[in-house]
Amino acid sequence: MNSLIDKYNIPGPRYTSYPTVPFWEDNSFSSDHWQQSVLKTFNATNDSEGISIYIHLPFCEQLCTFCACHKRITKQHSVETPYLESVLKEFDLYIKLFGRTPKIKELHLGGGTPTFFSPENLRLLLEGIFAKSEIAENPEFSFEGHPNNTTKEHLQTLYDLGFRRASFGVQDYDPKVQKAINRIQPFENVKNVTEWAREIGYKGVSHDLVFGLPFHTWEKMEYTIRKTLELKPDRLAFYSYAHVPWIKGVGQRGFDENDLPSGEEKRRLYENGKRLLEELGYIEVGMDHFALEHDDLYQSMVSGDIHRNFMGYSSSKTQLMVGLGMSSISDSWYAFAQNEKSVEEYQRIVDQGIIPVVKGHVLNEEDLVIRQHILNLMCRLETSWDLQTSFPEIENALESLKEMEADGLVEISENTIKITDKGRAFTRNVAMTFDLRMMRNKPETRIFSMTI
Ligand SMILES: C[S@@+](CC[C@H](N)C(=O)[O-])C[C@H]1O[C@@H](n2cnc3c(N)ncnc32)[C@H](O)[C@@H]1O
Ligand code: SF4
Image (tube, rainbow, N blue to C red):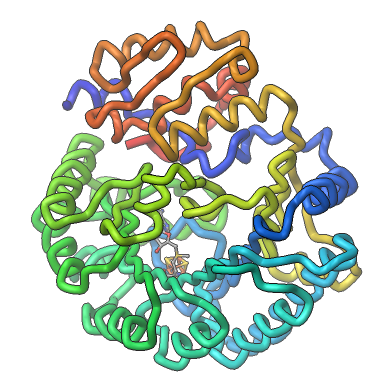
């Protein structure tokens, strides 16, 4: 396995979109393009499909030094109300654009830390959104909570508003690792929020774990996994630590690079972790995720409905995803757009009555074909092509996959590629062979984390 790691541990995207954000063509994008694209998709969307809404709630009280999310650290809770007012104003701008009431199928609160906000403020935000929308049948409402500040009241309030899935950031239980990432989080806190969620009636609780953090050894990782299994979350994200200290605003400075496990050690953490999780009844779903058999994500993998977007994996697909809040990314299937990344600037633009998208990309025919192949690989670990879904460079892609085939990572037949069990860990590398935009514009500086 070591030589495979030497060979394939290279910088690469996580493919929550294609094209990936660094390869968006900003020059040919404008807010007008975006609005036209949203409207086209919205008008073509039937009520049973509905739309997805993602709301970015960026504030956290304390900086975790490993974190690569878009967040703003503050202890001032006076920021809550003005921020939520801006989010509601932004939603109004979309309502005006739609011209009729949207039906919400999926809603996700992400961050930052949604549970930084008081339950009362979250209720006001959601009631403001619901007052101008209809809710689809069997909606999927979920949120990310920090175990250190999620209260029973948060869980009850969100449950009463229709939320049935909660994910909690755990990361790791080892004291030395917690200290290095500046996140002291007792097991008791995670136990409480998990048990409260179940008592209240949530149908899915998920925990986020990260492997490859500073000072990680298998012993520490095993301890974290075994503690996690005492609570048996329905779903687990098992993320590979993305070390991206060159991104502005990332606080990955609470530890030294020498404190991080090597690529080879990191791979072992994943392989051993996967084995242990599988022994204990979890099934790997797509990339970075494990679920128990009853969980929707596993079921959606079996039924083929599984989808991947900026929030990661989802058990159903809507063509239109509207991202509200600073830095949020929206997707109309034919175009992507990202909101302004500074809180103050985001609020200023919205206050002027302008949809605050500042960059984006309109997909061309080729992008749409490649997007589907990459989605197939990330969600179903295989992709096929026919006359419509082939593309001129496919021979080059197959050529570069030959080495992976020889290494046992993929199986290639006439017009299908399948990622093998051994190749799962290298899914990002397989997807990269289809990434025509990256091939044509080889980045000069590091912009992605390592694939392993
Ligand atoms: C927005 S946070 C979750 C909610 C809340 N802020 C918390 O930390 O509990 C999203 C998740 O992204 C993951 N994450 C953040 N930075 C990461 C990094 N550099 N590499 C891998 N995963 C990361 C963590 O597992 C984290 O729980
Ligand atoms: S891991 Fe969560 S709580 Fe920590 S800084 Fe990132 S978003 Fe905030």
